[in-house]
Length: 194
Image (tube, rainbow, N blue to C red; front, side, top):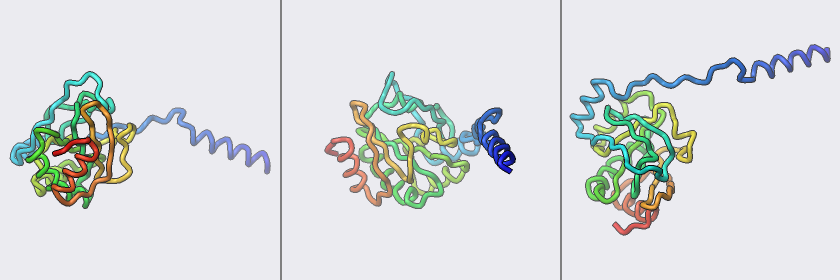
């Protein structure tokens, strides 16, 4: 009986090892189909702009542009910058996007916003939400959740990350209701006086 238990334990441990098991495959979700590209253009969503920094404060992760356009390596972006991580199924994300759009319209030339749609395998739904909320700031797609393997891992949505001019990154929980709340949060996190 003891021998049978040892054999069973050995088989269980062998089955749990990663020997011979391939890592998970990358998603094949397309975020730049002709339909998404057309919707993005019709909604007036701004293009994604790769940065010029050689090594900024954000992680070295390259994300695709939701609705087509240039990929962006986050480490090339410079501050001050607001990064809003969201998903189309997130109620608080839907709630705060109009306030973020107001901020973008009023202060975007001083403090740009980039949205990141994370682990969302329905980019059409994400584009629908963008249309419903009127958001026009650039949107990246992290279909595979690459951010979850970095310092920008999120435990809840929406989440903000703030990149200061000197490359310091801070974060805060999202779910804001108004332009005033967004301005206060940005000022607090980035040490600004907008």
